[in-house]
Image (tube, rainbow, N blue to C red; front, side):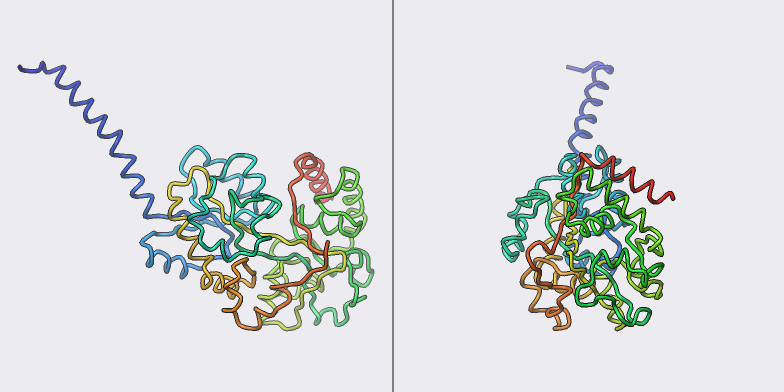
Amino acid sequence: MAIPIAKNFSLAFSLVAALALFSFPACTKREAAKELRLFTWSEYFTPEELRAFEKETGIKTKADYYSSNEEMLTKIQLTADGDGYDLVLPSDYMVRTMIDLKLLAKLDHGKLPFLKDFPSDALHPPYDKELSYSVPLAVGYTGLAWNSKLLPELPNAASFSWRDFFELATLSGRVTVLDDTKETLQAVLLTRGKDLATASAEDIRNAFAYLTAHKGQLKGFTSETRSVIEADECALCMAYSGDVLAVAAEKPEIKFVRPKEGITVWTDNFAIPKNARNPEGAYRFMAKVLSAKGASSFTSRTRYRTFQEGARPLLPDELAKNPVVYPEAAPGEFHFLVQRNELADLIDRSWALLKSH
């Protein structure tokens, strides 16, 4: 029996719509599987490494870069309901924030074979106790870069402290701190026997009062620590361990100093956003980077260690036996940065006020 034209058109339209419904997403998934969108710190992966990953897997890797955790978080939130990234690298405290905001996908440990090579204590960090949403990549330390050309003798060298850094008149105008609220606040809290994990609101207010009173000691605030150290712009700079070692390789007068009150230990971590289009590609990238060979290459290039225990035997002695890359610490000497949501407004307002005067 012939079908009326109107009904025929309706049926044809329904078939096209149905095909579109089932075909287009599949096509999108196939296309997504050929590309990995990476959002990362600029110094971690070279274009050559990304091209090598593409050649090995057929997955084209597109990398975008950020300069702060907060910048990264804002962009991930803006793309949370749409087309976002497949792999990001938040620092420890930001992992906790992103978990609380439900921005991260739960990880399948069966696709992370390198975890068997991690020491047991690395599998239970305070910010993600079962590594349910993140995997540590870089492990670094925040201390001081000492330029012995500009400052031939380090005052109180055997027991140099954060208090010396902020108070000694001989250092006035010759030191810089990180333009990072948590890092600089933590250094001040350590002079008072506290850290971000244990500080009360009163401790925070007292720390900012101390920092305000000693602001004249500082040459400035900077996040570009490597370029500042390279240019001999400060005698003592608050700095990340990998940056200090990278510059020291060319300038032996640069040395890493651990103030006696302790230093911050931090991790940058792989994590997969909830709306990732290519999580399988993300797992393959993590497995390559955190294999023994991949992790040794990462440490050789960045001077930051990983928890991959198979990497250390592959490193040259200058890194494998370097106490800045693989430090030993007394109990209580290393302190994590933590996100204190109940104190966030106080900290942000105090920091803005400090920077504005």
